[in-house]
Length: 99
Image (cartoon, rainbow, N blue to C red; front, side, top):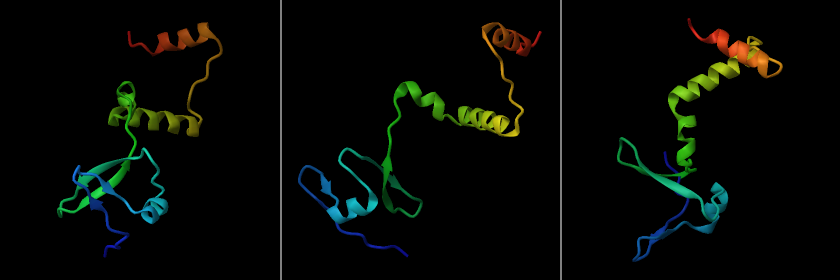
């Protein structure tokens, strides 16, 4: 079941104003960008979106997210390796290279 929050009216330039009480309830402030999505039933949804700078897109790739999750789990498990100083760090990195 859906809940009607309000009605937006589009002007001649294609702009639609979201009623103030709806913006307040949803925490939508000036400058918020909304993704326009269509689901498999044909419904249109406006979803608040944060754009990612191009030079940071790699961080959000599934492979990188998996690597980060593994690293966080390693920290949580206490299986991560800590080094002190540049020489020790370089020695660890060198040891990880497969001969």
